Amino acid sequence: MTRAEEKQQLRKTIRALEKELPAAYKAESSAAIARHLLAMPEYREAGTVFCFVGTAREIDTTAILQDALDAGKRLCVPLCVGDGLMELRQITAFDQLLPGAYGILEPAGDCPRVEADAVDFAILPCLSCSHGGHRLGQGGGFYDRFLSRYRGGAVLLCRERLIREDIPVEPHDCPVPWVLTERGLWEDGTPARLG
Image (spheres, helix red, strand yellow):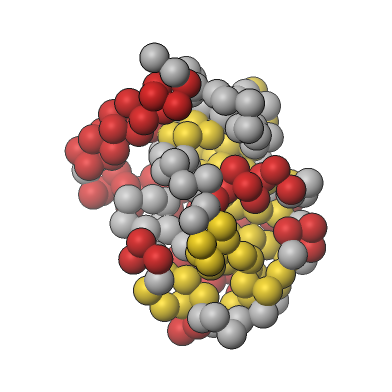
């Protein structure tokens, strides 16, 4: 089995597991992850933040997005513009988010574009990841392309019950230095202190 096939198999497994997670656990883990993230000095000190808009299957990022707006940070979110291609677009309010590709809330097309190298801190989704920062995404390549050109601080958000240490890795995969679950923060695979 190739690495790509292993990834596809693991995606099926993780999606099935995610469907079985109790709603209360999803809500509690999302809230704990948001609290941990808001305590990270790297987030607090960032002037420009890139954050995904969580779907029902992902971590709810509403509290993070709201905090960034309330704190006066320049907040950018992804806009899908083609196969595996996304742009970072600045928003200043939630009403600038509209249902877009794949039913995900996205910024309106007239929201200002932000280049990756202008981002101080990136908050990224995954289906699963290892504590060491190896990411399993949906398979579209959107975030792999972003990570290949981004050099700032980045954190993966993942529920602890979906963590897998045996993520298949391909040459184009870029590990992310920080992983945040409801249990806390990992830096390069080692538990780290928050704040």
